[in-house]
Image (cartoon, rainbow over all chains, first blue to last red):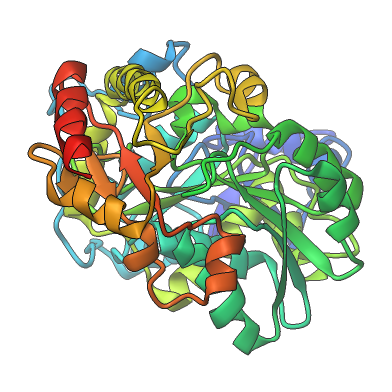
Length: 71
Length: 417
């Protein structure tokens, strides 16, 4: 499966299904509790991380905020 | 970057909180005295601007030395994030303006620091913001003062110079019922006496120039977000995109990305260093401030020339019970007392030998001031009355000197008053 992650092409091993939560694990994304996920330009609600599956061609951004605290 | 909250006690957190340790690094926070931060590639800097990576870009927006101070203060108050500012007034103005919009109302304590009173009544009123002032120790008056346009409640943990103590948890309950945030200025109590997360505040502000610095060397302020107010609320549609994107950091994101960035009242790295250094001795200093203040309050209370004393540590203070519960039996270092009249107050101040006559509080040194003729000299008589600024009032910020030296200095000056 080919994705665009943070503006760069990323090839992910094909799986039957891969959720956003699964992708966070797969890519070992830093600070998964605090990261904001943007899927194809839309900001995702955290409650949908488990139920939303990524598809070939998706564009995903992992975004962080901020200095000055725990985020 | 995520920092694990160390499971340390307060006295240790003020020394270690938020400081990342490497295999070989400085034991103090380095002063990163740089306006901007260079990145090796165009895409690396783009990643930081877009939020794909965290990192400093420009000191008005963030600086590693300032970030260390912010992290430590966020830990100490039990908040999720903090924004350090150029002064305490910058913290209050930035926090409040990040919440309200033209047409909104602030419900504020009538027992406020003069600068805050002026900001609310004289400055923000020019931009369509109305402030209603109510007695912060009257929770019924606070509930009654909330209108459908009220967007925040603002109180001080210990009023300056009225030295009254509102019941913060009761006001927090009123704010919660009204669906609006409670902003608390905790400058005088500091997180040493009560942490923001325990008080029930949604947002804490400090003038860090005071007890947090502790030596009167540095001006600064901080906004600390408890991260628990529900901004997903009909009263705050302007928060919707921030809630969606930043969740519990919605308020701090709005502070950083709008008011703090656009008004530019940022902390200087050198000041952040000095404040972090000062913070390390906060617990020790507050113990001494509190002990000296109660000793001085008792001395003044028994002096024939003193007409009244305001200090919540005195058993006869109307605020003793709530302060004892709220601050764990400590009452900070600020008190006020009355002499016969303004002339008596002037004579007393003129004859002090050790205590300094200065417009500041929270210094290691004992400071006094006659507020009516200084901080409040431009205020009308009725405004002074509202704020508790009597002509015979002397405000004292009790320092950490030997208590007998403070009392002896006051005794000899009172002899001349």
